Image (cartoon, rainbow, N blue to C red):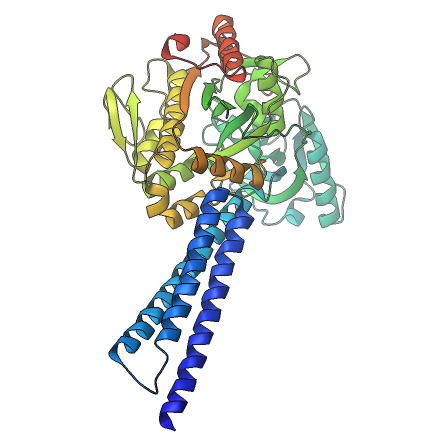
Length: 502
């Protein structure tokens, strides 16, 4: 009787185990299909393996279930079947967790696409007695209607509503003129989009603006970036990505100056990538300046779509298909997670802020060193042009490390965590899945080349700084034409050689 009960319990246990194994196997199979990242042959191979395991466990547990006549071989078969089943369940659940995390990270990077955030604040002097906006309702507020007036007007309306009054305002031609008026006491408050703060602090004599003032009030506006229908089949057609650099970790796009302006021209058929750097100070007509020239970096003050349209105009492009705004500070964590990268420096130099030393030739860099390498320009003979090349070197090194090493497999969790908040893009998650699928299916490396247009430095007034002359780079048209030829080669499926870059 006891043996029959034991047999019944074993049969129930075995069946429950088989059902759990079947459920776990179905979960990982469904998740693998859902991600669309894994090639069909891999999925079918895995499905076949899971099915074989199911039959193997079934055979083992049933061959060893005769408890009425216990034998050592029966116990062994039951034990082996149980072990295999539990192992399959654990591996399947772990694999499901990995794929789920990958999908979550992709959704994090692409889920907030086209969402832009504007923050407009009220500044008063540091020693001003006002503690709230209501305390300042009788002040005169400086503002500029030269750019971003719509957001400024909304801020004024919001202040009026909050204070139940109509504040006094005074217009100025530029942000610097507003600061002068605030410093002199001509006005006691000023309304400014926070994206312009860096423009002020980079101006000689105004470096301490943020320490001399305090924020009394803030108004935030969120809206969508203009998006045209320009998607392509990323595994079959050439496409262009605008890579913008930002120091924000917001999941929304930052409306701020872009110190990194790289166009990536990708041809998936020829597996060719051209990274084209344009100096931040390039003196060009922008999409919002109505014929007046401005620094390229200032385009970011008017939104990422302004930067894209302006660069498309510079290089005679019909369109730029996608953007990716990268927080280069986040690169530090990513590079540490993949075990560092190797970059080749054209000269020996040291970073001005962190005192890191880089030698001519190969340099093994951790995250902190890589960030210093990418940011330095003051100690480079060609300044911002050199920094642009270093940023492209770093991007190439990361791509190479992630596509040609086991880093993704050995530390997937840390890598995915570092990507969260580091990149905001308007790729569809399905596009990224397709590219990963293609890489896993076909394997091999990509031919990644870098080129930077150049120019001559001088000082001029700009659309964003109409009063004061600031440093700009006058484009070298011959280098721009050279870039256009390289672009055409990539789009036509031709391979770029090192000689083509000279």
